[in-house]
Image (tube, rainbow, N blue to C red; front, side):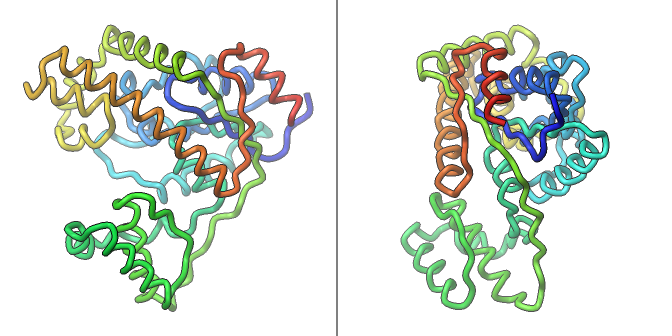
Length: 302
C-alpha cells in the first residue's frame, strides 16, 4: 500500500500483544518500530522486560538496548532519542510505529511535553516529602499565581514534581523552554477482557521464570548493578532481587509478583484513559481478535 503519513501509535497493558501487532503491521506498510518502554532501553534486561527480539523478524526497531543497565534514563532522554529515531526512519522512507506500554513516554512525544528537561531539586524534595497532600496542593496553587502550567497532580509524587517545576519556572523567568514539535499521529490501543488479561499475565510470568528470569537478575547483580537500582527497574527485578537476597521465599515472590503485575496493568489502563482525557484520541481494538484482523482494521482507518 502507499506510504502512510505521520506516526502510528500502538499501546496497551502488559501481555496484550502490542509487539506482535506492531510487527505484523510494519510488515504490511513498510514500517519501523520505535519502542516506548522505559526498561527495554537497557542492555541485558531481556526476559524481565519482555523484549522478545525474535518477534521482530527483520523489522527495524529503535530505542531497545541503547543504555547500559544501571544508567540513568528519564522522559527527557526519551524525547531526544525518539526525535532522532523518527528522523532516521523518515529518511529511510518507512512508516514510524511507536509501540509500548509506558504511557508517559508516549504522551510526552505525542503532545510535546516541555517541562521534562527541568532538573530535580533534591533539597526541595526532601523538604516536601513529610508534608501532607492537602498542604502540598495549597503550596502548588499559591505558586500558580506567579507562574502557570498544566500539571498532573493526581499523586503525591507528581504533586511534588509539579511544585519543583513551578519553583524552577519562577526562578528562571529568562530561560526559554523549547517545546518539541507536536506530531501527527493515529493511536490504537489493545483492549482485553479482565479475565483474559489475568490469564495472559500469569502464563507469561510462568514462562519468564522458566526461561531464566532469575538467572538474568543474578547476572545483572554480578555485573555490578546494585540491588537498589534493580528494584527501581520494575516489578520483575524488584521481587526476584528480593528473592535472591533472601528477603522472600520463592512462593512468596511468585504470589507477590503476580499480584503486582495485575495491579500494574490496571494502572496502565488508568493512564491510557488519562491520555484520552488530555486529548489523545485512542481507537480501541479487540485484543481477542487475531493480528491479521486488527491489522486490517488499522489499515482501513488509516
